Length: 480
Image (tube, rainbow, N blue to C red; front, side, top):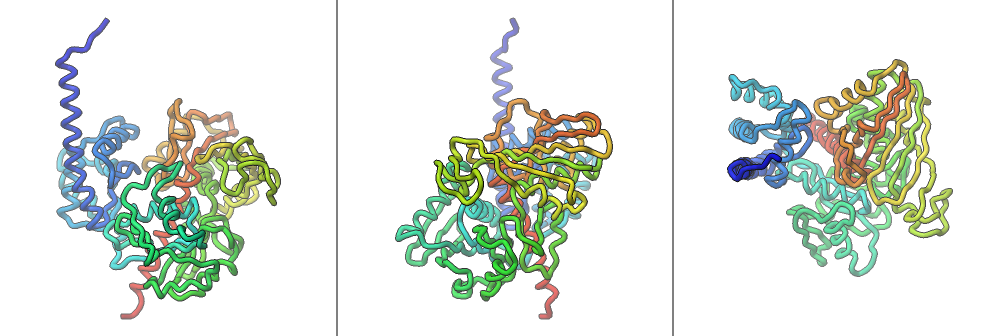
């Protein structure tokens, strides 16, 4: 029986320590570039900013899924130093793509030329954001926005608007932001000021405004101006209701975190975000399920054509359901969410057509609510215009997830061991489970996991960032 010598053990451990030391040396560079210049560094979507040295090593090893080699930490540091030296600002720096293409000869010259051409979103000012409602999605949006604060010249979370829940409301709001049964503890520090009614989270000062009516909120009193209000309440889904936010000075645009009624544009970032016009003051970010399936459906439709299909959503229960049997205005949703699978309706299949008109009238859908708190799955049962092989469609979706235009929306896994909890905190809109793919002639079945809370919230932030960039460009065109 083969044995491992002590020398081999020592060598392996020393190699690990050497790599760990390199990763540790990268941490201050990554942090400084992000804090001072809004440089967001990642490896094929695996963010490196505010990550531990071990997580940085894991991201470099994960890159072997693309070209079957582990990225060199040493080479990554060389790239970071070049970006630092060039003084680049407001860029998305994908070390996986750069190091995957960089030649061995003339490495530094090639990197200098390549990174200098990366698109920049650097702004001269920040954009105020207000969260109207502070439930599951509102608190995750807050976590993401705080984590994206960078130098403070991008999106800036200024306030949350809620109904007062009692004398200890501020403490409870802060506690819910600090601790989450699904997503874990807040990564940082949180302080409250009862007299000023503020929450200070990692240096982001958030005003807590109490109001039952959007038309009574005095944003100007808190120095909030030209803000994007993100309505997380779902109370209003039509233009007239959401326009109430625009009646208040200091509000410039509104985003609804739910499907909206016509004529509002339902936006799935990555698919139709370019449909947002400079004149659009209200848009909606559609639903979590619509965001999960539309990017995948677009890729499949462009490659093979979709004649028709059915979407079955296996969805975690939500606050809309009852913990135990009780009255509910919706059919079946009054039965205990914790004890039952609940068959219910979903508008996601029809909503896809609002973002992807080519599929108008081609999809049907249902939903089954199940007793899990987060992470859902959509099963896409499709009839295509052309035959497709299983390995072929899997490779298409895998490559899209790594290097395609929709790589921020689509992820891919081919692990035989993953279950729903493995996708908690995944920031992609949907994750294709390649091992579950079924392809027979023109019949294709795809299984798409999605964190219906965090993945969706990440898509909402992308919509807000896009609108903020539009607003900044519009202000630059105004006469001095």
